[in-house]
Image (cartoon, rainbow over all chains, first blue to last red; front, side, top):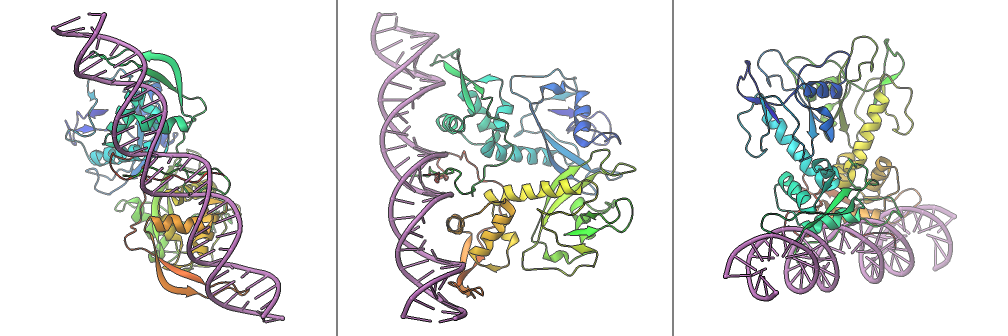
Length: 212
Length: 212
DNA sequence: GGGGTTTTCGCCTACTGGTCGAAAACGTGG
DNA sequence: CCACGTTTTCGACCAGTAGGCGAAAACCCC
């Protein structure tokens, strides 16, 4: 979600929401406050620090150090937002202000990486969802096609997927109705990667696949 | 490597090296400059941003926002350093200044995670090393025993390990002399995790192990 | 040469993830 | 109402990975 700047510098370019850090708040409180002026912050399903951007010339005039965050909202919510904001596709960004395009690309890269080794993907989906929907989100974030079969198996084996029993209505062209799943309560949002070199006696990791 | 503070606040406590950011440098240049006043910065084998620490009360007096870095040096180098600095074991930290203890623990956690899914481990070892040395570094950073067999096999399969042909002299109690390895030139320092859900037709990932 | 120590190698197993194809469950049009 | 297209779901197969273990190799010292 980008915000069209009204004032110079970089008027009419699109920028990330943000603003100045107050002396009585930490950076995460600050970005939540800044964002709250635009949208309902409670919709945010995931927030994490991304990186500090501090090149001396990243903005005109006095140097500004920015702490960038990655924030996600489920795909079913479109929070109320003012007229000067707009959702944009990460692959077709408009002309952006300052170094914000590189921040977005870094965030997209982080999201793609974390999708592979954490269950952060659930932050992109509604409370109940079909595997196909989740696969589409994964594909969009990763930039390549993901097999629904593998996605379901991988997530199920990690005990992250729990069937609700319900089904979603088929699309306009028919097709078998998809089963609905929810995020398993035991599957706490893991933000750390799975260790490859495990402690001794901890069950065997994973592997497999390959091109035959 | 910690630095014993001479002045208040928190005099005689141990702190991480650092200082104020100048207006004409970015944060990484700044930490390298600060560090250069203490040690030879060229010894640093890896530097990466860790996180921003910005709690309003993290230091007494006016609020200070800190960008913490994780920096590694190979285990064989002990750079010249002034008398007010000292190497400390991460598991037996002295009384530390400000929130620096939590920064260290965060850094240790990051290192442990990255050891599992990147080849950052080479930043801990000398140019030529034995598998046992590398295993000891892994064990120390991860906090649990690591099998030298697995470590060698995993790294070899990723084409990161290259035998030099030489051997290291056995220890004082004898034993078979260990073969020396070097960091393979093809094994660029990967700082991103391996994707678990790969693009189609990309060869099969990994798996394996488990407790029999 | 025997005993102790450390490294190295091979074998086995459990399990993972990619691929593929068949079956299931729907809508639609003739 | 039945053939067809569509989408989802499930099972089977396979290559490849990592953990565990034990035997063999290579050294020291006595």
